[in-house]
Length: 302
Length: 248
Image 1 (tube, helix red, strand yellow):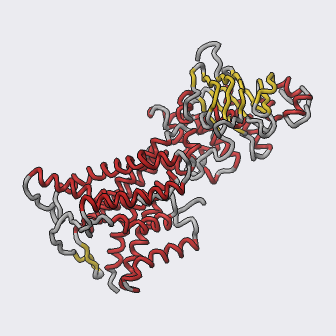
Image 2 (cartoon, each protein chain N blue to C red; image 1 turned 120 degrees about the horizontal axis):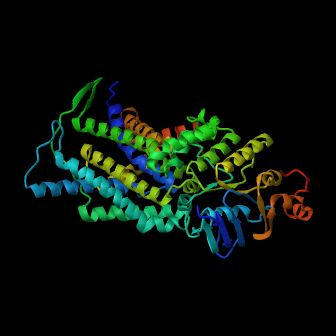
Image 3 (tube, helix red, strand yellow; image 1 turned 180 degrees about the vertical axis):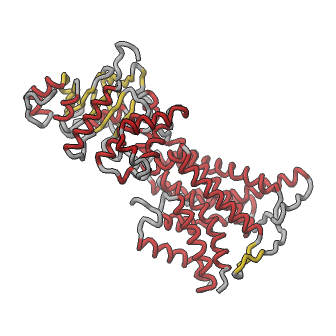
């Protein structure tokens, strides 16, 4: 059996996992399901695309690709800038919209507001960039045989490696730093967190910045390996939530593991039961896991 | 610390969870440096709301809270602790999903970086049973160990005033004795203690003075021994008959 679907699934699963970290952080710390999170993926990708174009325009010549990859250094610079800007976009959305609603303490209103914000952000992207797909690069890459009939392009290997690197970095931030402990504390008990001296509003701001930045990274990776479209984030939204719930809401390792499982399940559906069932298979896995373990794979509490 | 300045002054405080619905109605209390003071009263008297408001967790509608003379009335909980008031809630007072070590590290984060490890080491020395369980999730500790962790976590920041809400709740009589014995040891290190208690006997046994609240208002105040021996107060407000000689 050709295991190409496993490699494809792990690749898309890593990107889903990156996005799902933001979903699970937002859900556990701000206590609402943010359906606008997918738009940070799309806005991040378009942000990086725009900055890459501006860098190319300002230096007035084409930049040679880096080594075996299909893109040059401008995308690396643009990626870092776009991650920061997408984090700021997420924070701005909180300041303008969610923080006002949070004060009223009604999670349902916040969820509905996030639906509205999602549509507005997506429509704005279509208005600015049209619905036509865009690409970071049009370089043709040869896939490298990895054994067992599996082939991946250098771009795919790099994006998978970078995604795992970001996951490890986030894990270390959450486990080893004061802000990471504060985020875990607010997630578990915001009142007690305030009592021990944690500035909960600061933690909320950091959560938006990190969630937005990680969504942007996922968007750039999808853009490099597939394409950039205004609906790219919306299309990933359900897999993001499936991954976050599958892993256990509030668990960052769970979100990543959930992303990889959803990605592989989706990819496995294509050769096993047909491409038409791709979306459904991930949810069958989700339902099966939740029946056996309602708190998700890594969930510790109700 | 300024000589003669009370550790805590609460002046005509009105506080509650909803605007216009005060639960605490014009309560005033003073706590002198080095004292152990108990807040007593029947259920619904507003005891917990009073100290949660002092700690910055419940909105204040009127009155003032002064900590060593500094006005902390308008400060939020995460700012109040930086002025030297550490609060131990009645329930969910540790982070159950974090290890003992992470509970300590989180609380120590407001100390200067160079002091943190040394202070955590002092707490492990003061609470040796926790030192042996530093890698254990707090949620897996026994009720008594959790209460010790909650108190130790509060002490890490070197508070001037330790405020405890029902420290004995849910503990066995043996553990209650251990916790209150530890509170006396903590007072000997110079920490002032304000505690809300339903366990009147245990609270009065270690307190210097006590306030009795009822219906959100001051009803009585005095030396712990005097309150205990006042039959009328004991029966009306403390839910117990006096046992002469029980308070030492």
